[in-house]
Length: 169
Image (cartoon, rainbow, N blue to C red; front, side, top):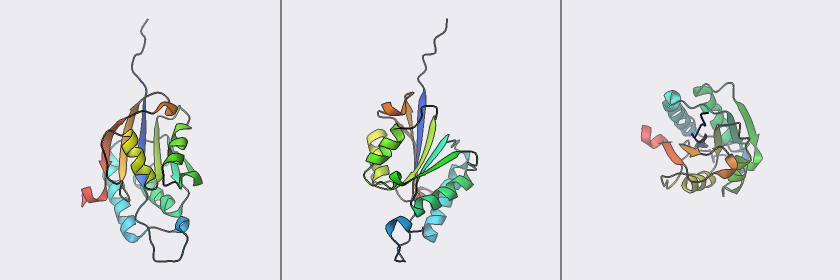
C-alpha cells in the first residue's frame, strides 16, 4: 500500500491597494485610486499574466480603493470564475483581522488571493514569509507558499514572488 507522504501546500497571493486619491473630502474608506494607481495596478497585473496565478478564493477589503484595485487585477488576470468575498474586517491596518480571516478559511481552498492594506500586509509578509520586505508598496504583489494542509496551522512559509511597480519601470 502506497502512502502519500507529500504535504499539502497552501498559497497566499497578497496585493496592496493601488495609490489612493486624497484630492477630495471623502472619508478614508471611500477614497478612490489615483490615475497612477490605475497605471501601477495594470502594470503589475499584466506582468503577472503568465505566472500561473490561480486563486480558489479572493478576499478583498470592502474599502473603495481595494475593490477598484481588485477589479483591475481580476480583469487582467482573467479570474472570472473565482468566488470573491468583500469583507469590512479586511479594512485592517495591524494585521490581526487579516490573520484571523486567513486562518478561518476552509481547507478545501488551496490558493487564496487577498486585497488589503498596510501595515497589515507588510506585517503578514514579514511574519510568515522568508524574505524581509521593508514595505509592501501600493499595487504591490507578494506570493507565499506554505507546506501545510490547514490554514489554521500557518508557520513560516516560502516567499516565492515579489512584484512591486518600481521593479517594472
